[in-house]
Length: 345
Ligand SMILES: [Zn+2]
Image (tube, rainbow, N blue to C red; front, top):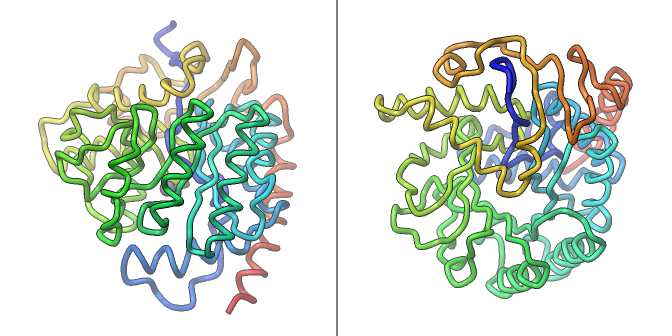
């Protein structure tokens, strides 16, 4: 590999459905903590999603990932009023742009047992149809024990893990309910409030920018020595070089001995789900692509991206899709989404 090249970067935790959220109407009142951020912002947005807005948010999110050298996305999706088929809409949108995606529907009991059953069924349907994914759970604190057990069972049957938010905020006191189910292929997101000896198996995905944005605290991911640690954006884009820089500086604020090499290694966890992304080639406008330099170099951008041998970004421009058209249609879809949010009580 040339010094101005890297493998394809992987976003180990994304919410493509949030790509249209920027510019959304303000919540009915200012959230004062993590739980209210969920209740007043994200759990209103997911209710407003329909198939059309899911499709355009996924296309825009995939395009923006590609434009930042991210070739593979681990997505976690929720759209309570448009569950059936939603994972295929996301998978098709990413395939059109040329970016890989691992899909999961975030099952929850927030909308009663029927809502949980529909979410489980969508995960099952997608995996049974040969879709690339995991079984999603929102979080232990919004799921009944039977729902968690059912998700774990579907995942085992399909030979995949469960993708679940864990101890993101102090409100999630029920994460120990996951202890009886986790396995090495589980995808445990955040872990901010986990004790060091949490006893959960799986990869822990750190999302430093999102955690700061929600004021949930610092996860101190270096302490998770029994787990692989990955790096995600939690839906705030898929610029993994930028997330790496945020992860580094957030880590240094806590412990000045942290090195850029250690943080760069967190990007490797995504290759457990996307081993072929190691053979993707991203050519950057900077050389050499060394973690110690990148930690202090803003604005490094990809010039060319090859995925599975196909050039999908050339001179910074997507080759398979019309980027301007996606941005325009996504902006129109966002207006429809915002109108629904305005009319929500
Ligand atoms: Zn998340």
